[in-house]
Length: 62
Image (cartoon, rainbow, N blue to C red):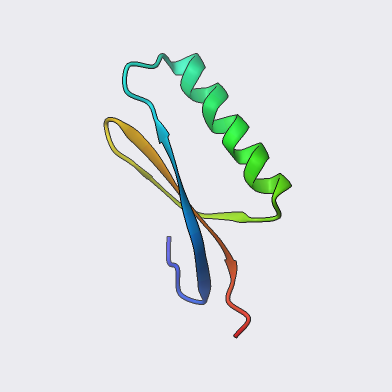
């Protein structure tokens, strides 16, 4: 996903090491709900064997 024209506000890291699929799904859904509640958006998602990185931001208006 291209981040051109976007402003990165932060990164949310979810540790998924030793978690089962149901626990991972619940953690990601809760993170998405929290991000939406804060008025932010997820610009990109990166995944490693141990973590999920949610790149947070919004449109660059400047």
